[in-house]
Amino acid sequence: MNSVLMDIIMKTTRTYDMRGRAAEADRTRARILDATVALAGEVPLAACTLPAIADRAGVSVQTVLRAYGSRDGLFAE
Image 1 (cartoon, rainbow, N blue to C red):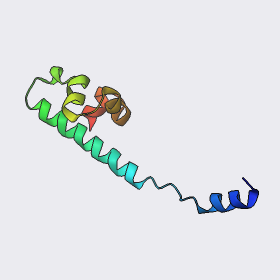
Image 2 (image 1 turned 180 degrees about the vertical axis):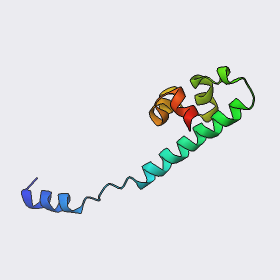
Image 3 (image 1 turned 180 degrees about the horizontal axis):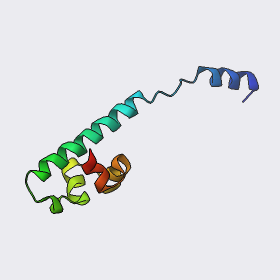
């Protein structure tokens, strides 16, 4: 590919916008919190495990940990 064509391609690429990704992360965090509150209303707090919360929220345990750092971090919210 010649350099003129590459210059045109490089100049016409769109910029990356993280607003959509940030909004989805916010919705995921909200689902995790909603699941935690709902589960805590049904079972003793000790039974509110990360796997149970993740399952209720429809995410993985790793997603819960990425969003809140730990079970304590989640319950601090």
